[in-house]
Length: 522
Image (cartoon, rainbow, N blue to C red; front, side, top):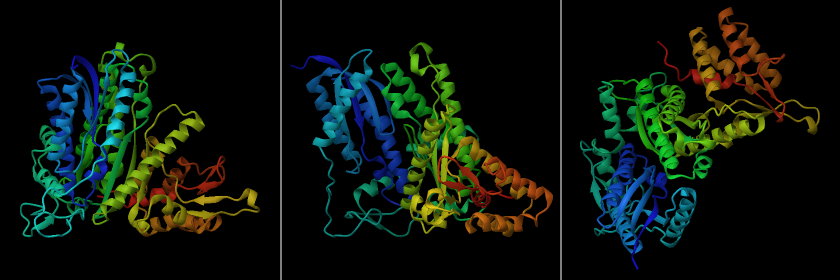
């Protein structure tokens, strides 16, 4: 029997980040992102919405996932989804796969329908593990120069390349899309800039972005942002229209905030924009940009996301967002990995992901332990090039944590030479403090001496700090004292803030001084 019923269909592209960031070339990353966007937001939608045997309505599509209400016979739906999977695999040349699930759609019980559809999705994922096999063999065995799979084609990275490169079909497909300026985020952002009357070239590689760092040439940053509490928010949705409103609000707000923040903060250098959007969809954002724009960009995009999402929620039908959604306030957390343009991208990506998790954890701890209801964004950052490019936790434990003075094991305390992560308001204060220190005219050698002082310990660090501090003029001393006061150095303490609930003292001085390296000076 193939009688028509309404189904909630969920689709997902697993392991998106592994596919997009499986190589180190900007052209391939951009191409992979463009291909995913086209398949997720255009191809899958068009296939389901225009299939002759289906009547479909899109609830949401973005970030590698999608929800659709489909009216069809069960057999026709299964055949359509099977065909769709084959098309997606062929279009990506085996680079990624599509998994699908569906369940009978129940009006006003979207959460129950979704739960059953997601169970079906997990079954599809478990029963059909994706295994890549090379579709073409050319008679030679050689590694792909990008991902180390077996190569099967020769191709140029850029049209003006003089050399041909051995590539697998997956990477070659990424390059096709990465070179095409009429595809994906490249096209979307180019059109956005045209509307803002900005006429400049987009970067073709990471070196061009590093060259655009005015404060410290060759330095770059990777900003990774993700929505806060999205899982909890969507788990509490019981109606289809609620899901549609909130999911599209998040999707459109992160896009608008990202592009507006780039245009506002990242000014062209030698007619090249020192920024590249690597991934943008759902509530995820990954942007690679010049190091001296990273902190201002993070502050701006966090503010703009909340402002844009609040505006969109106010404009929607309020009768659909009642109860727990009455005062819904959407925010994002961010991780920023600083490095050089030749720092392996995989290292910066891993650190940015680690920093994002650290920022989210700090925000949650602040809410849970201090009953903080402000729901502020939190931001964590780290300089990869300062610590031999190891993971963030090890860097902070081995290089930025030292033993303090104590009389017995019971009062044993440690000194943390940092106060990261910061809330959005704290990071703004930190950035402004770093700017004020530079404007006060403190020589760079004195700044470095101040920044290194805490590493000498609780007492010797204070003595070294005072030795440098007393050689500055009144205005310079005032700026430093004010900056430290803002971050808890008070009640007789000069450098350190005591954490009563933990056995450590911390200082923000090193955080402030290291940011001065990435501030453009006239």
